[in-house]
Length: 303
Image (tube, rainbow, N blue to C red; front, side):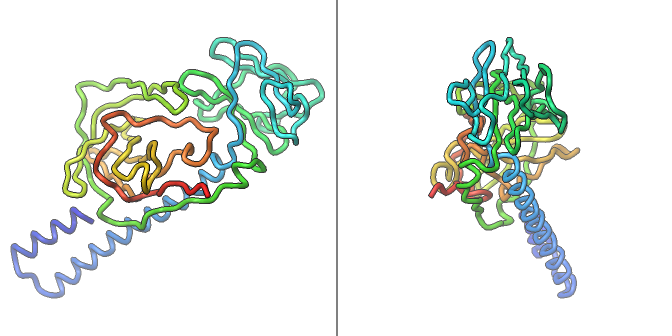
């Protein structure tokens, strides 16, 4: 690790240590680096499994107009579903910012295993447990793009899932795991982050994180997703070349001493890198870095 290595060099300069002491120090340093690499490897495995479940099978994102929006496999519906679905499953009714579902009589549509037989208000995916409608293997739910309700569809048998080509990563390197210092703003505040569809997501930020990388002092502004949990949305000098052009994401935790570890080996692509039925935020201008960070996930290969 960079910090441990620097400390070790100071010890070498200060005093001539016995060989066995140096061996112990070197072993401890190697163990620390091995632990960090193992942590990054395990994180990547979990991330890939999560993305394959949640985002790879996304097969539709439908805008809603005010009032009723019929849904089913018939071509005349406002929301056209795969052929495996019934011709009409019901309709989504948009009233202001609220959406309810009215089932077609006789059609088997369920929420959490329970059949929907009457009109039901749908909780969006802003909630921890959104109301997902299931029609066979197909699931539908309300997704907010900014403040705009849409209907998102997941189909494990759809073209996006069948054509997905997998993940590619840079080798894990200790030099891209850095410790940053959190510099607080005078007060937490909200920012509007545009997404690729032109809608704006409201997020909270509390300050910036300053760190050194490739001999440069760098600052990134994270969003706070929960107390002491940071979400970085950034670009760097590799964006549009080795890595996805729009953005990459990275999470870290704030320590009690106002430091945080940024492991760019765990930087990853938003799902819009490979799936068109997603909505991904665009980095704030201050998070569009010039420094190259060839670490974490590489650009998705389309062919």
